[in-house]
Length: 290
Image 1 (tube, rainbow, N blue to C red):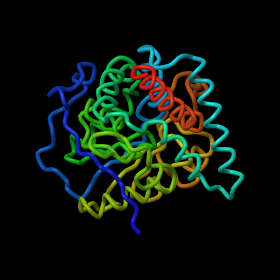
Image 2: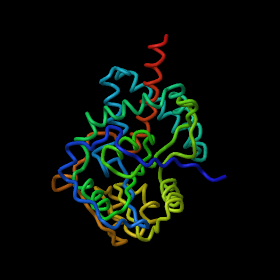
Image 3: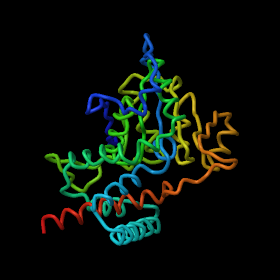
């Protein structure tokens, strides 16, 4: 059975782009290229740190959970992942456990919170250099998608705020506007990103040899290898070595002689945090209705 991916072509729900980005916008190209597109990873590529981390920070500021709740649920998620790893790498138990926490939450509530939190915490952390690269593709008449392991609702908000074409992300099943606690398809991570890009190319009529992809992580080597032009942005050590060996372009927008580490969770830690966030949201819901 073919996997299912959710691709959202986004428009700004407020009818405008964020003021901090408007100064970088250039007149659009007069002749769009329908066969070319660009795909951008989000965490540490488009923005400093992990989007789910900033989402969690915003939820904590709104008293959705306490520091103790976050630590307890993060440990629970780590335990699930360790158990899954011990069983031949099967992550199904861990995924089901994480998604069970969001059962019953309304999609529109999550999207509303994501919009608020993007404006408050994520917008100032967008890498200006990466944003300019995305804008160059738009100015050339090419479409630009974000491709992230984060929930697609968060990716959709980020894409809309940046004026991009849309977002590909991890999808939770929704029935009657509420999450069921089950996953649709697979986690948007590693080879899954490459498969999603290939499927999107088929639907949109893209020529992947004319497309570009951008990422900071060696986890995205499958996606980077799928397109004609791969660019390492703020690369980790493994990706930097691979980029040099393969002759890929490297861009580093971090400051200092040695690239500084952002004081937020890594991709792996962000995965644990994602489960903690959804757990905290479920706890908050029970407290409100209890």
